[in-house]
Length: 473
Image 1 (spheres, rainbow, N blue to C red):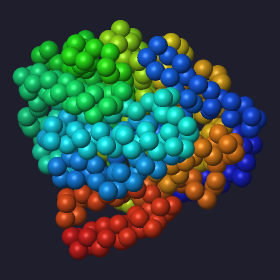
Image 2: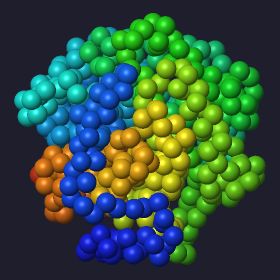
Image 3: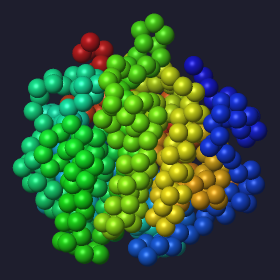
């Protein structure tokens, strides 16, 4: 179903009001848009030259040994010249069995120099266009994919609804306490290598259902890493503490945090719409109301953020949902990836959920800057929504994910023209997601990018992936 048919701000505002999406608001004045997006952010830990970020968007285009591949270099070259002052480098595995696919980036002693060269290129290209990279912050996201690791799943706990959706038997072994203790040190080793490569900051990724995210919902896991929130946060606390002990202030600590997990959805065969999978209550997910997990409860989220602040985290990136379980929550879309369910709600309600949760969290911790998510579906109007949220203290930094793939210099246009080019902006058609799910490639994974608007590069890749899919069906 087509939802985005808006010709101007007034039309999308009227639709939001009619839907009750009261947290989706827009700044109309072009100069106030420019001022809000272009304002510097000064913190004790870092300075950003503007309030625009590029989210960690995996390209699935690394080499088998974990090095950045040709398309990885192309993507970050484009981001570097795009004008955003916060470039959040994509999920990079801390060890091989934590990769989500065969071509996910993987930082290891043998390739630290490759990451150093990639980062040096980003800073050089950014400085060449904008005069300096001193007010550019680069964050490397460190991850272990846990339940979604390839080729062997490594779940942190069992949740019957999630197990059913991901085809994991209820007696499948979960990662042991001893293995978690050893993995903590792998994160520290990766952080040390990130510092050696020259990164100023690392993100200990805790979202999207990956290992740390799943630990945060491990209410039924026995032992020191499950049960009460103090235990569920133990791994994250230990990793952050060990990084700080090993590296002092050499690295700024960041966390991309999944603040509302939701429940798995499946496709209704009669309507094609997404419907919640059968689940029991109280539901064990993180950030959910246990008696009604279709809505958020931020009590534990706020407690965790308070701890993160105490543990030295200087920047939070607010994220929602699990893309494997409920993609409409994390990334409201106009069209689902092929074979997946249609939106079970108007996408503006999904945008509203992002803005509502991020706004409440930022208001609760005004001294801790947070990066907001969920803007891409708004297309050319996303900068107007971002400006309103920034002006009203509902977020400290505006982040774009999918929107940056076809339009890596959206930030430059936003700041110089106070409008975005409608012929370039992401239409949330999710071809990029479909490509991420395609494994019938000689290297075990097709690279992903924007097929409609970066057609010369990703059009042939899409054609090859379709041929491979047909041949395997």
